[in-house]
Length: 276
Image 1: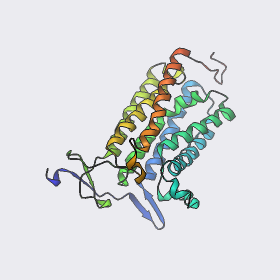
Image 2: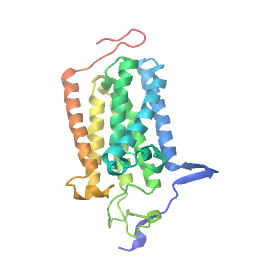
Image 3: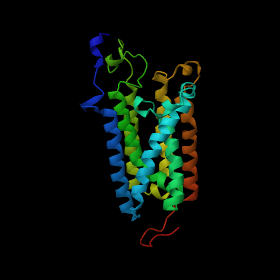
Image 4: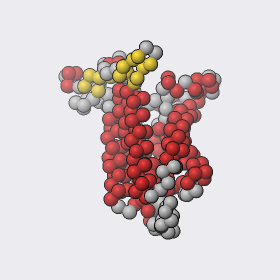
C-alpha cells in the first residue's frame, strides 16, 4: 500500500509557550476532564439532594489520588527496576509515566477514606457516581497521549494507521490511543444512560461493575496490538496491562451479581427523605 494512504502524524504536544510555561494538550485534557467531572457530580448531587459541601473535599481527594496512584502504578508495575535505584525520580511526574491501573487503585483507596471521613456511606455508593464522568476523563487523556505521540500500537497496513513522525517512525502503527478513547466514550454513554434514564444507581455496585467490565475488557483486547511499554513485557504471555485488567473484570462481574441479589438501596438525603 502506498505510504501516502496512511496518516502522517507530526503534531506538537505543546499548544503554546509563555516563557518557561509550556501549555500541553495532555495537561489541558486532564484539566478539562476534571472540570467536567466536578460539574457532572454536582448535578448528580443536586438530583439526589446530597449535601453539596461534600464536593470540594471529594474533588481534592480525586485529583490527588489520580495523580499519586497513577504515578506509583507506573513506578511499581512498569519501572521498579529503575526507580528503586533512583527513588528521587519518582517525584518527576512532568517527565511522564502514569499508569491508569494505578490511578484506579489510588481512587478506590481515596474513596474508601473519603467515605469513612465525609459521607459515612458505603464506598460503592460514591464509586457508582464518580465512574460516570471519570471515564470521560480517561477518553480525554488518551487524546492527550495521541497529541504526545505515545502509547501507540504495532505496525499495521490499515489505511487509518498513523506514522508517528515525531518519534522518527517510518511505518504506520495502530493509533491505539484513538481505539481506547472511543471505547471509553462508548462506556461513558452507557453509564450516562444507566444513571440518568434507569434505576441502576439504586443498585449499589451496578454502575462501577459495568465500568470495570467495559473499560478493562477493552483495555485487555487492545493490548494485543499495542507495543510493549517496557522491555520486560516481551517475555510475558500477556503483557502487564492485560494481567492488571483481569482482576478488574472479575471484580466487575462480582459487583453486578451482588447488586442484583441485594436489590435497591436508598440513603437518607439532607432533607430527611429516603429509606433503606
